[in-house]
Image (cartoon, rainbow, N blue to C red):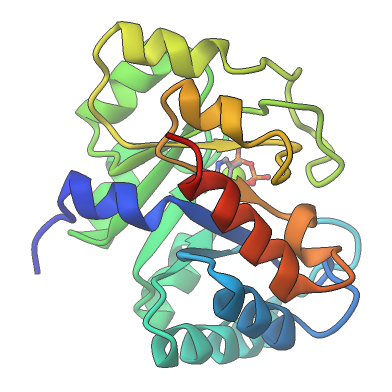
Length: 219
Ligand SMILES: Nc1nc(C(F)(F)F)ncc1COP(=O)(O)OP(=O)(O)O
Ligand SMILES: [Mg+2]
């Protein structure tokens, strides 16, 4: 196996759904299946927040969602928990600035997908040098899904990265909806990632479909 090509990574980042057992109104497997059928292109299992699962329960749920993603041919990314990602042979890992160091994670995961949250140009340049396959950039808008989120920054950082000819694929995150997606794509993001815009929707399928339309209709 070799590292994912950037153009393939850009396509996967178009509609990136992130969720765990605490983010939805019903069971996670049903939510993820509906979201994928609605048009999600990549999934990240993020088991965090009040009531989040741990240990065997977390592993069993992750395995069930991973099996669904395999059936649907959607790559399965694990947030933070590198050991779980290795145990499941997941398709990749996402880490932030406060998580395990990127160089150490890259060493452990080989050529699997490595996503890194970045908040400054310097962090982006360092993350690229340490083998990031994509950057998570945000929060673009204020978010209810991450208790310790930093201040909302709009699309300024995406534009800064583009002006500095940063080549690494970029997905935007933080308070994103179908309605506020167009300017994010126009600013240069390759895709958008969401938690509650899909997981909290009355129709998960319709929410995913609307988000995909918003991304693909923005030229
Ligand atoms: N989980 C994430 N996924 C993305 C992605 F690019 F995938 F959209 N971007 C950013 C984050 C946030 O990552 P982090 O800063 O470690 O916080 P947490 O571990 O609480 O999610
Ligand atoms: Mg993290």
